[in-house]
Length: 238
Image (cartoon, rainbow, N blue to C red; front, side, top):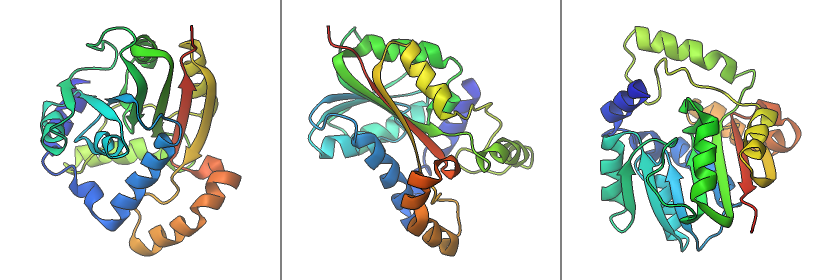
């Protein structure tokens, strides 16, 4: 994880450029919509791998309160600037610095693939959620497209390509069954898993526009082609 931290510290000042353009805004909003659809709107949220606070900002704007945690001090610094009314801290998801049953909503967007101990992270998520609290994770899925991404990133690192997320970080890409099993093993109930995002922000404009048009069809009828997997669950009520 030290390598991941170093990378995101290096790109923290330019990270938001990735989502400022039209494609980036559409892509990130689409993911946020999926995650928001399964979380309580007026809850107290913990965002793991919060980055510069984009989802914390979205959650607060919709009526909730939020805390963000990220491994990168640089990203946390930007999150505090974006959302000064929210709390941010540096840390890792396998040892959360919060008391039991603190939050009633928990989210993680595009960070779970980096986690070396997903079982440990989900145990901690379960611990800090209140009974009845909801969790939603959106991360990279294993598809015919993403299967070549690690190779591209490894080559990008070797040639010195300085781009957000590009590097040999040993990410794990999840199938629906795999992430559903992790959720259930951690104790969550009402587990649901789906796919989202066929229009990826790295696509050229003409291709991106076409992908957006067919995205609803792909997500419903051809989900194995979507880039991300979204899993949700609930901590049982006592």
